[in-house]
Image: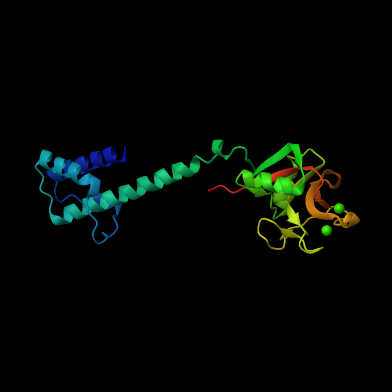
Length: 221
Ligand SMILES: [Ca+2]
Ligand SMILES: [Ca+2]
């Protein structure tokens, strides 16, 4: 399609050139300077055909302008195709992740796994356990939650009381604890979930307990 379109445009420009070889209509596209070594590539045969059809003999300046137009068109089509490819990710191809606010989550409401199992499940979906960074993100996510507890990516497995994101390996930048949490109950609460009892604020819980969980995945915008 690109070649056809470019060919049609060049045919049009050649026709323009045959009737008014000094026309500056191409200038409206504001072509950039030529790169050294650039050539007509795939469009050259079409250009030659257009020139012979219209018996137009473009001078070097006009050929340069056409070459610039071709380059611009190629860049624009490439950008268009890239954008199309990215848009394919939204919304149908994000499954099973769905947009919630500005992010994409897979909220597992049925299957219950321990924290490690949930972590593995999210990775198997090419994502990670949900990593929350603001009240806005948490508050938006809360509107989708119904079950008792959902694992997220925070834990203090490495050092008691130092809560880190397993996604980044760094200290968690956002924590919002339920009342009285984190309490490290029985010295076993090392993984963090969103607990219904705390209006889905955070609670440290036993990593080996089976709960629902939330995966997250980044998609290109
Ligand atoms: Ca702990
Ligand atoms: Ca707790």
